[in-house]
Image (cartoon, rainbow, N blue to C red):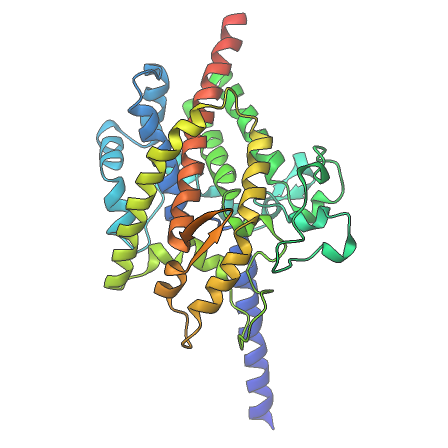
Length: 358
């Protein structure tokens, strides 16, 4: 009897630990490596742009370390994404700050400006704004998706305390970056707000950050266990040590570079980016891919254990465009990168106008 009781206690402890791990994964939108890839790539795009101020370039390079370190990071972006799947240490500056919000989320660090904590800053559960109470859940047909008009631009709306604040948090970081460019006493302050802006903006492009079903476990199907697909969307690619995993990363990088080139003109057409509205758009557009990811999850478990090749290779047409999960990941990260590049430059230019008025 004692052995049985101890086994039951052990089983419950393991279940609780797994549940906590799943909960913590809600904020890890693109994984540590993914966030750093987005941030460094946006910096490289600015460094390579002849129209960008030399003063801004100097700050950005300093944010990546000394001159030699920064140059190495920018030249080895592909190697960083493709050939290294093991964990790495975040260095001070932009690398650290681009992921720091996730570390703070794990300890529920307070964010007084929203009367909340860090764990609520990374997403919005869009369904909670649906006027139909029956649709405040995830539905496989996508019918629980809300209209933009249902989402109030009022952070004091009490629904946000449960739904999340990523739209407002990104907007706040943008304003702080403008202020820091204009009035910061040290560049470290600029690195912090630029890194934070990168993090929250990028989070909004992860489809699972737009839904109450952030783990992808409410999909229909015959799965024997609930499984955290949020983790596979963000981290599996960069942690896969199989030879096949490296090939997947090679394919990802090709798609990522292609999307950077083909989407750049679309970003340029925007005269001015409103951070709040941009994040809202990212969340709503990402929501459209959730039914596809449900079916990708079924394909990944078709033969028993989770199959990353089946997951990333699953293909479906969404909004008239056929794409695999791997292509989806590359496209969303590329768009986040391009918007980040544009919005950093916009913040710099806005701060310059403020300086000229002083």
